[in-house]
Image (cartoon, rainbow, N blue to C red):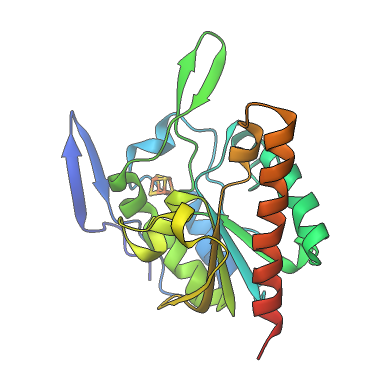
Length: 221
Ligand code: SF4
């Protein structure tokens, strides 16, 4: 049965944040369909649609990003924009096909502010992340991955708490209550923000090296 009203997390200027109403089901498709209707926090108002996770139901590896971007918001699919292209290429170099991985985000609606005609990414707040967390927890429970990859600090802090630092912990095999093994690395969008070609190439290589650690850990017993 659908839980219609979650617990209130915060209220501000007429907006309300509640914990997302995840239906009690073992069907990932039913959870994804319910997420399409989610209004548990204000982010749905300015976004085009919910961008739920995608990938095989029982994928060995589940990757968590921050939130959908401009391209993802329009397409309704995670990691299809420029950062997604980098992720696809890096996964291939690390020895795993994107189709074998379940890919999702900590927050399922695009948070943005207008700048001229452009929609500029805004970092989700802790109350946005808390409101959306039940969707991510449902994905983790139903996919039951052997290994989770946290892409960037929002994903890392969603899994490990606010004191988690990707810069310190990247490329290590950690564990959490969500999965026996967790590897954190940077978000691929950070590679797009590098100031020059040399640093972009260097950071890309580090990203692939972190993903190789994840692939090896997922293959190990
Ligand atoms: S961001 Fe998450 S909690 Fe907020 S409306 Fe969208 S799906 Fe619901």
